[in-house]
Image (cartoon, rainbow, N blue to C red; front, top):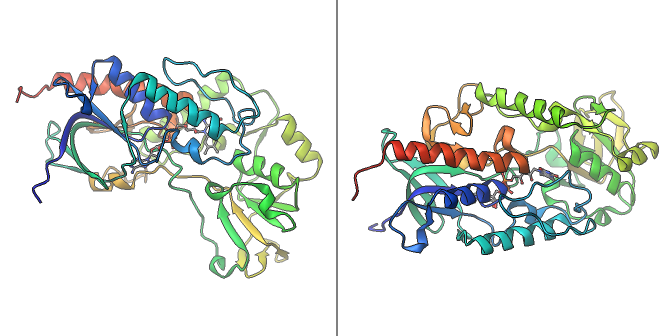
Length: 368
Ligand code: FAD
C-alpha cells in the first residue's frame, strides 16, 4: 500500500528482437528512457531475462549461425562478422548486449510483468502494469514477449504413466544425453527435422507427425515468404490464433536434411494413439518401445499477463489491425503472428512505435 507506480508514456515488455526494435524507434522519435530524468515523453523496457539476447539465450548450443535460417540485423547496427560455427545463442547474446549498451537503451531486468490492467475503459486512461519488482503506469504498451516461455505440449492418453523421459525442445541441450536410447520426436516443423538429424547421429530415432509433412522442392523465394506472412496476417486480422509459418510454407530441403532422408531418418509415421509406460501405441495397433519422447510441438504467444485486458476474440486469437490490437489503441503486439521472425520483429517494432506515437500525439494530456 502507498507504493506509487513509475509513469511512462510507452512501456515495452520484452527485449528480444521485437522489443529492441521498438526501443530503437522510440529513441529515434525523441522518447527518452524513464531513468534519464527527461521530462518529455518517456519509455521503459522491462525484460524478464537476467541478461541480453531474448530467447536466443536459451536456444540449444548446436543451433549455430550456419544452421539458423538467417537472422536480420537489429535496426541501425549491422551484425559483426559471423563465424558460422559459433552457437547462435552466444553470438546473438553478444550482439544484442553490445547493441543495448552502445545505443544506451536502458533495458530494465530482470523484471517479469505479471499483469496489465486498465485503470478505466477510457482509451485515454492509463494502463497499470504489475511486475515482480513494483508497478508501472503507462499510456501505451508494446508487448514483445515472444513465445519461448510458453512451450506447447499436446496431451495424449497415458502420457503421465510414461517411464522414460519427456521433454520439449525448449529444454533440449544436446543429442549426447540420449546416446543408447530410442528417441521419439513429435512434430512437423523445422526444429523437429533439425533435431532428428542431430540425434540420429548418435542414437536411433522415430518421427511422428499429425499431418504428412509438406516438403518444398523449389528454393524458398522472398515471394513465398511474403505470401506466408500475408496468410498469417489475414488470420490474426480475423481474430484467429496465428499459425506457425512452416505450416504455411512447408519444409525446405537443405543438403543436411537430404542426407538425413537418405539415412532413412525422415521416415514419418502417423501420430501414435497413446503413450504407455515403455513406449507408444501406434495408430495401427502395434507397439513401439521408446526411452525418450521429444516434443517438437512448437510454442504459443506468451500473453498470460495480458489476460486482465480480455483481448481474446471468439476465434480464440486476438483480432489485430496491423500491430495494434483491434479496438484497443493503447496496446500493440510485436513479434506476434505474422511478425514472429527477426525481420518481422524489426518491422513490427517500427510500425508499432509510429502508430503509437501518432496516437499519443493526437490525445496529448494537458501538462501536469
Ligand atoms: P524473444 O526473443 O522470445 O524475446 C522476448 C523477451 O520477452 C524475452 O527476453 C523474454 O524473457 C521476455 N519476456 C517474456 N515474457 C515476459 C514477461 N511477462 N515480462 C517481462 N519479459 C518477458 N527467426 C528468424 O528470422 N530466423 C531464424 O533463423 C529463426 N530461427 C529460430 C529458431 C528457433 C528454434 C525458434 C524457436 C525461433 C526462430 N526464429 C527465427 C524466430 C525468432 O527467433 C523470433 O521470431 C524473433 O527472435 C523475435 O523475437 P521476439 O523479440 O519476439 O521474442
